[in-house]
Length: 308
Image (cartoon, rainbow, N blue to C red; front, side, top):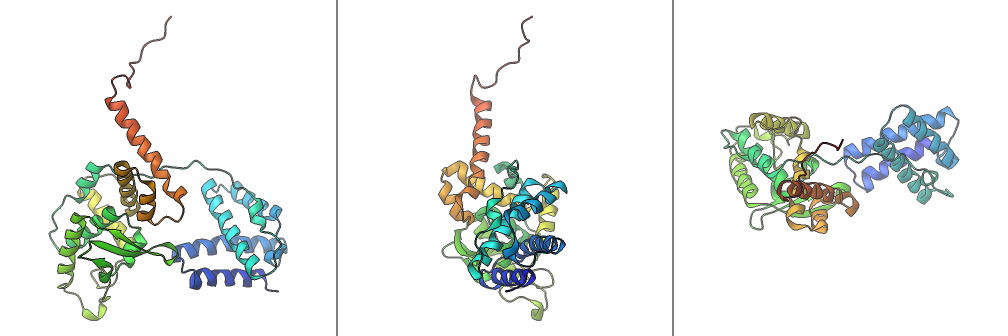
């Protein structure tokens, strides 16, 4: 029988090599399972088979007492469930102890979005140098197609179809999908790809096929894109803490407002479960409620003093 440490390493190799999960997802699993291993060592549990639901409940309770949010506790419990499910397939395990435990509920925060005027304000600039052409294409593409940051940084030049005006991206779980690209984003991409061919960088440093590259010629990093977005938000006099995922949220919210087609938004975003996409219906309702309040003659009731 394998030790718990060996079982955890086997699981991590599985999600890395066979499932092809993103590095940050693997790191999150690794962190949670390190907590599980430390707990097991403290109470002398040697294998995954030794765990009971009560052990998992105690471990989640410890996290709660240390101030971990309900969302983080749910994520950690999800990690445990996935790990024990894997062990049940690979070795003898009568039941998944984490399936019998419920994490505390958390208030689900609605994602922050930009309205259409704010998006126009952000994107309304004329590039003055090659950084500007690259950044314009990045920002237009993030909003036009609702890409995740990791999907954008992994994109290659041949991911773009100029004739069909689409982009092929690799999302979570190494799944590929093809997404339409709007006309303004396509023009920004054409302009950038023309500029990109003539960049004054050392050819040996250039990642030959990366769609977006840095000044050194290497594939652009997520942190660089985040920094450039903050730069343009400040330059265009927009909100603080603007991040790439806010453009993805804005894309989803605006498409849903116009179409009402939740399934289509799910496909465009690459969500495996439509329940993940349903959060945008709450944003859509907020938009409708705001319109109602502004336009309906009896929506805004005048405040009156209470009768004496």
